[in-house]
Image (cartoon, rainbow, N blue to C red):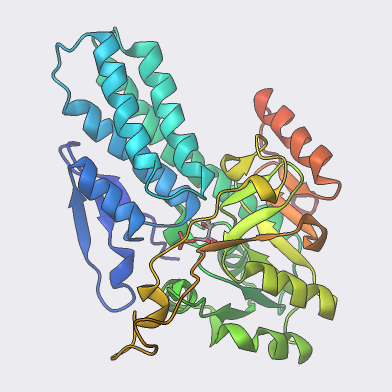
Length: 364
Ligand code: MRU
């Protein structure tokens, strides 16, 4: 199967970051070359590159490229201070997805270890490649655990885009569906269009139909009817930040889907790598929620504005799904169940101990 897995990478000479411009999909395949901090910031803020794991990977490449622009003979302390400044700037582009800060911190930790060494750039290069490769492996493992939760022929509902474009390969919420397809299974996938920026319509339905899946696009307000009709056996969504108690921030509208799923007795799963779990946030109340431009609601994607310019808009990019609505959180280490405060901590202990991801029971 063809995967869109090369949408963020270094240029051939390694001095720039190349991204597939996701704002142009599905109609145009356009790549952008990023060299300046301003272009990198703009790419993340305007969603040319998006999806929590993907912006982390991109930011790691960004920092490596920016490190090369610092004079080679710059003393270690100044080198570190400059990198820190660039990292803080990039991190301020989007506040909710913790993967962004997580990846930048990994690059800064590496820089701190090697700032005084002649091969500091090589080490930073290795670290950003490792971050990318680890994400591929984590998504593959999440896909296998997620697949163990569903059956051939099931109807699955998803919201926003948590596929290959939002990660590295396979994706998180879409990973089990791609893996199932590889194994000859077929699912009926309902994709919420995901107002206001239409990631479901523009990106998820594109990825799935290109992957040869049975995909049906619906408006966000149709999810209830589709569930009531008995067409959905599970909901799979991604995440931008998971708090220690399991409360989960994801694309605006996700919590509504979870409430509907509970009403209809449908399991609701969150799928994401441990790089999206933030144990420093005790609950969803601690997760910063990004507010975006009102124009995205009033006029974007319309031939002419659909509301008067003076109409007040409220445009949060994410909402928090209460942990009580979540049937399981699928990570690369397995499926966490309530109480999440314990199960998420247990996953981090495995991670700290360097344990391998393991395989879901049906694959043992
Ligand atoms: O604003 P976006 O498009 O970056 O929002 C993305 C989501 O909400 C995804 O579901 C989340 O980042 C998980 S991606 C694997």
